[in-house]
Image (cartoon, rainbow, N blue to C red; front, side):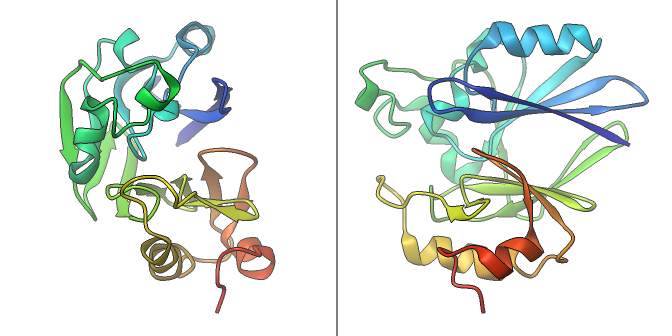
Amino acid sequence: MMRIDTLAVGQMQVNCYILSSKTTKNAILLDPGDEYPRIKACLDKHKLKPEFIVHTHGHIDHIQADNEFNLPVYAHSLDVELLKDPERNLSNFLSLPFKVKLDIRQLEDSQIIELDDLSLEVIHTPGHTPGGICLRSAQVVFTGDTLFAGGIGRTDFPGASYEQLMKSIQDKLLVLPDETVIYPGHGPSSTIGKEKRSNPYARIR
């Protein structure tokens, strides 16, 4: 069974999720975007051991604490270069050039990420970035900056595409069961059913 701890970190209040096994206490860090001391304090409080980092995409607000952890980093193959390039990950825009210096491993669509009794399915959802992904586990899906409660990710950054994002949401997310809980990259959680009914930005069929 999976434990989910959520920390809103950094100026952009990115949701950093700590996904851990209730059996072994081993954990996956999802989008540790900033505030390493807070993330570390949460891990220590619950006696959790992080094994690796997974990113929903490669923008600076989701990756900035990476180098504080001596862990492997996973990202979709199309976003690996964002983690290494301050221009593409938008950190140059903030005048704080940043690149991930750790070992970066590539993910692909439909790949299964496993840690003990935890299992996450990679769902490639381009649009916000070329290699944006969501991660599904049973009745929950971590949607990064693809789908928010009542909104969608921005498409005015380099490499973004409104048309691709809409297709990703329609074809990959809205087909999930209505009771599926979404945990987005920013803001509160929701469900697929609620977004179908009330999200004014996604073109709900």
